[in-house]
Image (tube, rainbow, N blue to C red; front, side):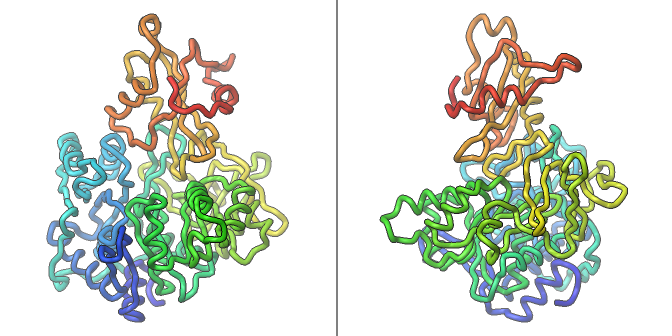
Length: 512
């Protein structure tokens, strides 16, 4: 393909196979499915770009969008790429607390929302947030329709693939999320590597059941554009409800994270013996959480497909990925091998994984340069490379909770818990959970006065956090109330490992 921007790739694919299906919006029944070809995708994205341009969006303008996994979301994102605007996607689960932070830190003048989605009024939230921002905010409600206009008024598309035009967000280990800076080139490189690792072919049909606002969104889109294959989009992944769309469109590649594999496996086990859940499925693929070898073997044996698991992060959307043709022991026990151009270094002594290559981000928004003197990005994760070049991720330095593939910062929740009038101190930890990977556990000390009357309950804590605008997927699922949190003798730091050891074997969730 010619060019070095995402829009170059869109135009190249539209010219090559304009009538081939690109996006299929999966619904509960065939008559409600919607489709868009690659040619129509380019034309509509260009018209939406013109509509946004008429609303004041210019090259370099910053626009935050918080939209579900829909055809319109892909179109909007590509329209912004056509203009050359800076876009900052936010997953739809986030609420006032997180979205307000993103708006303030990006200084965005535009916010695109889906109206009311799954019972939550995003437009009302946007209006609330606009009152507390230093500058004006234009809210674009795309529930009814995307803005469109004649593309003749558009300036030429951008031609510099090295310019930062994407800001993705990750909680990391601090209370505030980090804005990860990406270019078209970094995202194009990651998508090419993903397509190569999964051995995508012309007969494949992909699927996107994860939030398109994840950095995996453009990663996957690049893969579709490169190979001219379609993907089924699902706004909300739930089994068995989502299976009809997978079967109807004969999806061959699915996945997302370890939690997705477990859901597919559970659905398979609910069927009569000998009946395959998804007869067309050749590959489950994903990452975002550890993959137990036992789960890998069970999926392969019972679902009748291959399972390729990888290692990636917002800062580098494709680091390593299992090769479907690799040996079973490598697929079950490693995160695959890095592609050409991805330099993975295991730091001597600490074992920390460090990264260098064109798919790695350009740093963080308004934060110091994170790269070391040799240009490597520290990940905070621990690992080792096998003699065959496969990466084994052994743990993490970060104090991070990974629940169903979502990164959750304990410090962020702790800061909000400290606002509760009855909480004297709080520590939030991740505990092993067979269904979620990890569950969120809050361990609190009550104030002396409050503890004399009654003990805090999980309902009390979650109600408080909801009122603070915390996203639902970050809410604690377990609460423990202690007289005093365990602390180190020197600096008085809370000993979280002691808490994990104490409560990690307790699978009771939601108890007071």
